[in-house]
Length: 308
Image (cartoon, rainbow, N blue to C red; front, side, top):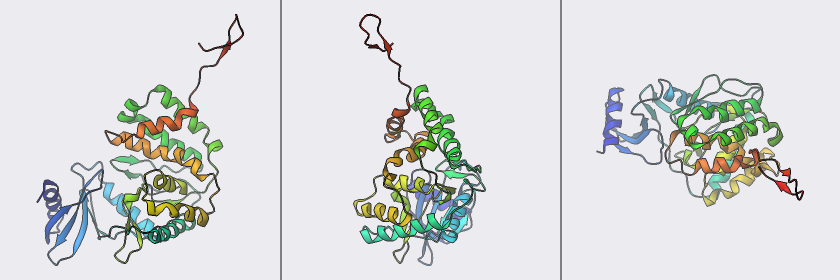
């Protein structure tokens, strides 16, 4: 058994799951160690753990998010077998099928989640976790204030973000935040997954779309859409976006908003990973229109602009 498998097996047995006979490490996760654990009766469970948990509540908050998506939003998620400080054990899902029909079904499921869970405020009743960093969910009545303070500016205090973005970058981000009401339409809050990239879309044993690894809150639905749109969804997912837009009544300009909404995820990646897979470059490109340019002044001799 690999070191990762041995680590997970030790955690499982310490939690009282003594019928585990083997653990096969899983790939694809970026924050925690994960694997598929086979039990003595031949069934399996999915398990993940941190070597050093970032908080005592990281897995209980995740389990709560899975339950909320399933019970309030009607979208499939794995059932929680165990959630404590050191371990999260879930029922097993399947890899999603690589078909257009699956993504069409997912468009209906996500649209249902976003249109049936509208809420009068932005936030969540507790903070939860995005990878190894706390997601601040302090309640706000105003969606622009919530997104600016708790989804964008919140990351400026992180060490790697301070190193990656210079003073001009940070000032441009602050100017963008000030202008959010001009840049984005007024939208209601709804229950969102919060970390919705393609690897977190899976399937139930009977083939229905299912979601894992949430960082839930009540915020703009397009935050979920932006994460899928900008993280290289598979070719068979292309029809998903048009169908979702139709089902939810999106205007024709929704694509133009995706880079601004995805800033939150890029900043989270910079804060947690080195290398950051180009996230800092994407942030700077999105911020470019919000930089202060030197003002031109007329030259004394010929009347042409002179930039100091």
